[in-house]
Length: 346
Image (cartoon, rainbow, N blue to C red):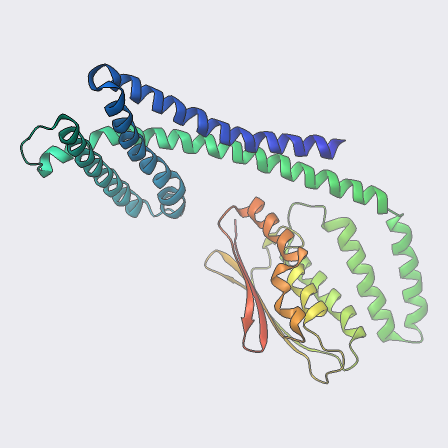
């Protein structure tokens, strides 16, 4: 019932954004139309309303969907200011030219030639529309934030439910594994080391994964333990080159990197092959964390990794965490399948 209620709330917020846009444009159309109707009559008022409203829409959507996210949000303020000015001048000139030509057409009279100064007189009217577009952008951001909050709440509720369903006394398991470790260590130290890695993985899931952020070193240790256990299942082993260059104090959200590593062992390892080469790079550079994996394509399934649920879920999570400030790419480079992730560091 909780899940259904949250989904209904998310749907309401999405519908609210559409309703807000419809109400705003209906109000603009009516305001412009009835302000022109007493002087221009019904037909010409309809035409002039369409011209003016179209120019308003170009300014508003050009700002909030193109200029604002591509330049202002990326702190390219000079480019943003220049392009906003260009947008206002261009739409003002086009609106002025269309209005004058339509006026001449409907009245059937000859007027003086159109000059640039006359057309520039239509530009100031777009400044107020630009300011209103910023207000509109804030309203959209509010609804988007509320939607993301509800989505995070939904995922948290589902995770808690799954945890309650699958929870078994973790400390009992850890203690049991420790006892097995000491028994096995006396006769087979290598196997005992694998048991220790399994214990560390389980401890990570219980103690670290529920946190908002974890030390990157802990995340890397988890990945290395996972790879060590996976290599047991490979007949001829795998040559894994893992490059690591990052600040020891760095912290990131848990389980962001695991999807790529998991896909390597699902789709990029040929268990009958005598040489499986995998390269992994984790580098901190210029305020970003760069993570790249590369492995040989085993079969056609590898080429379809981009459509897996793991990548889809990871992309949704990255959008909730970083908005549009991350970069995620997967694809084929010759015989190799590569995955690349770039996330900002706070």
